[in-house]
Image (cartoon, rainbow, N blue to C red; front, side):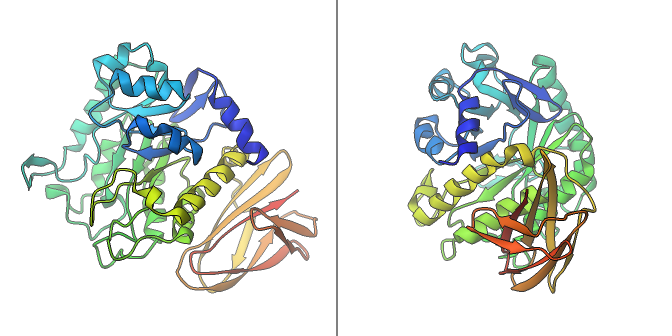
Length: 374
C-alpha cells in the first residue's frame, strides 16, 4: 500500500465534513479525493473499501438507516437522495452530498416499458433549490446522461439535441457529473471511442461556474456482452476525465447480460486489479491533483493529440498525459522553465531523459503516462 494512500485512508477514518463550492472536504482537508461506486448495496462496503472506494454514489431505495449505519461502521461516505430519514439520522454525517434523481435530461419512464420526455431544465434547477432549502450545508449533485457528449443520442425525448438544456439545469448545483460508456455503447459513432469521456467533461466544465465541480462515471463491465473494456481502456477513461477537469470519479459496476449482477466488476480480476492500482495512485497523488493546474507549461508534438494537465505541488512538477486516439505515436513533450535532466514515470518503474526541457516517449493507443519532475 503506497504511503500516500495510507495517509488519505487515515483521514477518512475521522468524522467531519465541510463544503468548498462543489468540492467535498473531509475533516477540513482539501486533499480528499472522491472515488465512488454507483448504486451499490452498503452490505458490499468491505469489498469496495478494499479496492480504494471511499464513497457510495446513490443508495437504492434509500437512504435507509441500515444503509447509513453500514457505511458509518466502515467510515465510508455517501452521495444520496434527500429524504426525511437521512436529514435526521444519527448517521447523517455519512452523507457528504445530496443527489437528484439520475439522468433528468433523458426520457423519463411513464409506465412499464414506456418513456416520455426529459425533466424540464427549469424543474431540475427548482429541485436543486428545494434540496438546498432543506439543508444548505451539503452540496447538491446532478448526474446527467450521455447527451452531454453524444450528439447522436436519441434517448432524451423532446430534449434531443438541446444543448442549451444544461445551461439552465445546472443552475444552483454544486457537483455536475455525467455518464457515457464508449466500449458498451450502442451508438455506432461512439462505440469504442474513449475520447467521448473527455468531450463530455469538457462540455460540462465550459458551463460550470467557479464553485461548480465535475465528476465522471467510468464503465468497468460488459455492458456490451460481446465486448467488455480492457484494463488499459478503464485506465484511459479515468485519466481522460481527470486531465480534462474532473475532480471526482465513480465506477459503474453493474452487468445485465447474460445474467444480472450488481457487483459485476468482481467477475473480472484484471479490472479489479487495475481499479485498485489506479485508485491508490489517485489517492497518493491527491494533493497534486487538487492543486491548481498550470496552463501553458508544456507543449506536445505528436502524430495524434496528446492531452496534458500540469500541476506544481511543493515545487515538484507533475505532467499527466493521455493519448486521445486509438493509435500509437511517439510524442515529444517540452516543459517550460525546467532544468532537471530526468523525469520519473509514475507507476512504471522507469524515467525519461530531458534535454533542454524536452523528452520523448512512446504512447500506445489511448495510452497514459504520468511524469514527476522533482
